[in-house]
Amino acid sequence: MNIQNTAAKARITAIGTYVPERRLTNFELEQMVDTSDEWIVQRTGIRERRIAGPDEYTSDLCVAAVKDLTERYGKSVADVDFIIAATTTPDYPFPSVSSQVQARCGIEQAGAIDISAACAGFTYGLHLASGLIASGLHKKILVIGGETLSKVTDYHDRTTCILFGDGAGAVLVERDEEVSGFLAAHVGSKGEGGVHLYRSGLSKQMGEKELAGNGCIVQNGREVYRWATTTVPVGMRQVMEKSSLQLSDVDWFIPHSANLRMVESICEKSGFPMEQALYSMELYGNTSSASIPLALDKGLKDGKVKTGDVLLLYGFGGGLVHAGLLLRWTI
Ligand code: COA
Image 1: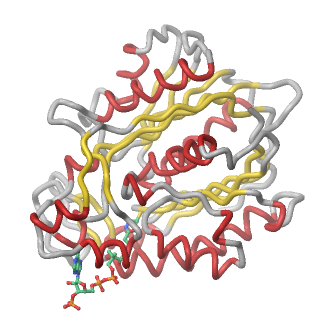
Image 2 (image 1 turned 30 degrees about the horizontal axis):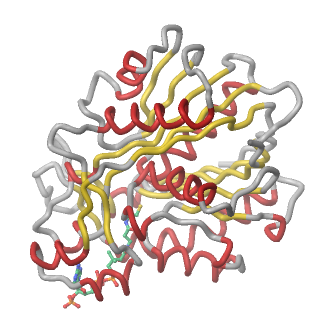
């Protein structure tokens, strides 16, 4: 799907993140399944991940991320008029995580909706927010990516339990009369590939596969790897073609942090320098919709991302869906 000219007078004005305290290291996983730190680091780049407590749910992580945002940037969220929460692990099928955030953050006059785009959820959420602001319908939108994937991970399955972790990231997107932070976007879906990565559901069998039946994540890692490393380089080019910039103008590439080897492969195929990629999987694992804001925030805290930088964000995952955004960082 092609979307021309997503430029809008909207920009990100604040960011906040949160990860649970409990660390799950590769060495602990060695005690749980037949794996090794060496195998995990070599194949994925992941060293540890964070795990939510038994009474800690996705809405708790999202509220904590919003609290971090308000404290660090001195921004009130009381007048936010729309909340988008991207998650595949909501506390309940309904009510939504976004409505819980609305109530617990004291936001009185906002619409609230959760979106389902798996690991592309955060970039899809930003894409929608920029459009809602560009259209004049809304002025101040919270976009949150939050997950408690540990609650839907089968810790007997070594092919998935080494990958996933919990976390949340939130950004504030505001209307701005002068500056546009959203430069271009490209989104896409390949639903026939949905069978390769899913959370087993209530009743429906996925394709030819026998339903795992325990509500956990099921994946064909090789297929997902192949799809992502071929789709994202093409998508990056398509984002750039819709802008007036070249890939060489991008200061930081922030892809979904699924696997370090995937990021390396995407960079190699697209001709983008790996040193300018930001990622969060080493310390947090694959946190799905939270992985991009966690990587961006780390880039800010490390002093890498600076005002005026051009950022290329690229989310991809279950669906199979993907969404890339070209941004100018204006804070
Ligand atoms: N520890 C040790 N061995 C493991 C293992 C683990 N945690 N998981 C799988 N293996 C074994 C397999 O059983 C297999 O053994 P075999 O050859 O005796 O059958 C061997 O390692 C290779 O398995 P394979 O699945 O082909 O490995 P891989 O190189 O494809 O790596 C992933 C597996 C999951 C790391 C990789 O496919 C991947 O990252 N895919 C993308 C997944 C992803 O990011 N999903 C979310 C996207 S949003």
